[in-house]
Image 1: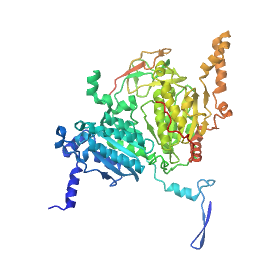
Image 2 (image 1 turned 45 degrees about the vertical axis):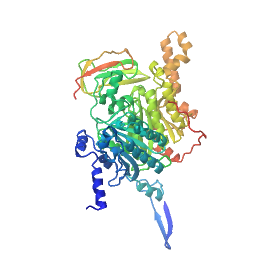
Image 3 (image 1 turned 45 degrees about the horizontal axis):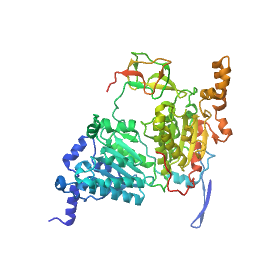
Image 4 (image 1 turned 60 degrees about the vertical axis):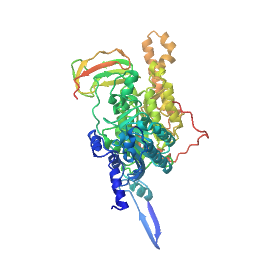
Length: 513
Length: 127
């Protein structure tokens, strides 16, 4: 006769095996870890507290009465990540394919509700075949998850990892969260899979080409990062978490900065090419300014004409938004605006100050851009930048032309401090185009229109291609040497650390979409 | 900085100076607070599987070819400059996506390109 304690331990031991040895081996053969192995990597050793291990489904139809589903295919609970409490759920692909049935959904909802009450981040490790079809309408628990995702948005950080299939209803929950990371080779994310696509549209495509990690990192822009494997994925989730507070009422964590906050960065003085038509890599600028030269780029493979990255200045989280001259001349377009708008909203929600680094020749002209609604997309970024109440510092490195200046938080958008490097130039448009309009008559009347055009272009250029004109009108607060930028940013952000902005007593704005 | 304080009836004087930067002034509290902060986590990106590489080098934005740096048959390395396209007041550079040979070069200086138009084709991608 076993004692009640022994009986409990034996039951628990069995449940902890999930779908059993054979299915675990199959999971490993696919290059995937099990749900529990993933949570072991995520949480500090021995810190995980599991809820609902003994939950059982109550479906009986379509053979479900014979299906034993330990923990109903999802492991839920909380633990500590580098000492901070974090809630997490991991779908267990070894149990009914990690599919979402009634009890599976109830467990996730219960966990999310507690995370929201506790004001702690929530991490979702997705690996699920989707809705458990045998349970029919009871899979509507998805909607409760979406509602809670939306409800918690901007209150607690919500991070999602796609570590296997994530289809249909299951794919909308990650899409509602702050950060999505897809594991290369094993993640599959789509609203409808290849079989349905083929039956409806006739398009033949495999699941990697339809919803693989690279599709979402390069083409759709749905995911924010790609991970090489499960361990890399968990490491990136922990890193991402380190930039954020537990909830929006707290300040982001501060880390030790081993470098002198006053140090100068001489390499920045020569980073802008002498020929203003030549390109440079703006990621090097961020690397040179950030603590320990470390930054974490978000959506690095999507809309590469803008770089958005999290980094630290004097140990404090900062979000950089930078035009990238290396791609599409750093011009603004729809995807760049969408990418930056989401990043600005994310940083603003969690009290992370914004630093804008500008070298933008303007918005990309084109019929396709206008038809596809570049205004609608550009408005998202302008709206996000205007409404952000965190400290905002704008730095013009070189070009600042046209409407893109609103996206890059120039005076008028409510920046706290506007900086310019001596290489800054700004006008409503480029000198050649401007001269052609302003001096149309003079050029037409000239004996040598080409020479007159060149002379007048040079005249217009001399007037605007410098930072002094803006500084004279107080559109720039400080002209600084590039080498001084890091310490200027650190000092200004220190001054602004308790910035407060009064908000209008409205319910919420009508954000352009 | 000089701190004078009383502790259990005894008077103390604590003098603190920065040896490396004698002009630097910072309070003891700030220094102790900063020293107790956790070390910032870092992350070194891990390489993912090589993406299916496309030898077709296209211009991402419309513009004018100002210089072609290679000729058909040239051997190139990943990242080599192939064609410069002037657009948006900038000289945009198109690079070789991988080591290979220039198979075809359908553009020359002065050509106007549409967005997405092929400027060079690199062959010989090795998986």
